[in-house]
Length: 351
Image (tube, rainbow, N blue to C red; front, side):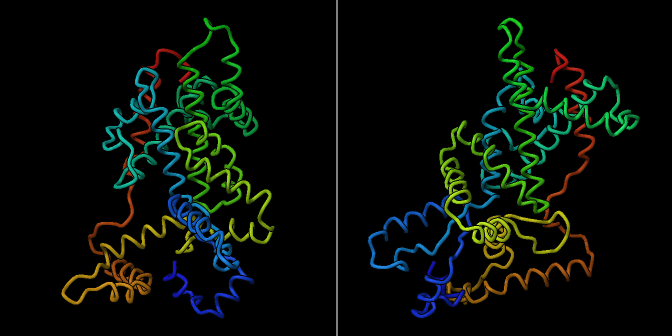
């Protein structure tokens, strides 16, 4: 933290004194980062002044790691449900490797993200065909916009909401359908996940704020007490502690960023930091007899410029190269394949 303050030119006594009484500094990172900052505040709580207490620091968790926690929660709850056509059924049919166990390293996030989108698409296509009594999804084009809206409302109310689950549980036990209940619960959580993922990509921080209570219930109901506490702290700050100016600044400028200006290219700040770490350790790594921590610190500030130069040269030459982003080949083929399994292999019409 001292190094960050030095780079911001806030390490001198006068600058620190001015900063402590005039400004707050927002620190964004993963859940471990926020816990460490809270620990520092706790250890310095009996120091002499406001600056030494580190009260000018405002810690917020990063949305990328929160999304990873949501993916882990969904995986733990719905993976081992092969007989109810859960995630394992879809992963096996799509031949997805590396998704049988959760991980915060490697390609698990991209693979899980893609698989959840495909599962959501195929499940809701199946529900649309059942509710509208159609054989092909393309036949929905013949419906009027008002009809489509009415069907969409009915699908959410009856097949992907908590109210639908409660109504089904109130039926006599012999009339309850375990497969339908599982499908309602999974579709409801999948809708929240795709809403979260789309809001992060498009930079819609208002939707992220609206999702906070639903994510809180998701984490509190699962074995993730750490992010339950983080969301409670954030909701407490947003609703009762922070001023409107600080609240607006955190939501608008400390959750998501777009470094390219392209539509749909927003990233969480902790994801951007993961990119910086990747560049420091691998792409622009320092090797040789003259490498040292001092040299790494010296060139690290130039990495964003080096990254832009590298991308520009690669685009100009347009040579065959390995891209820096994952691709989604034949997504429609995978969705149709999974839809066929749901329609042909489902014992009942409710999945």
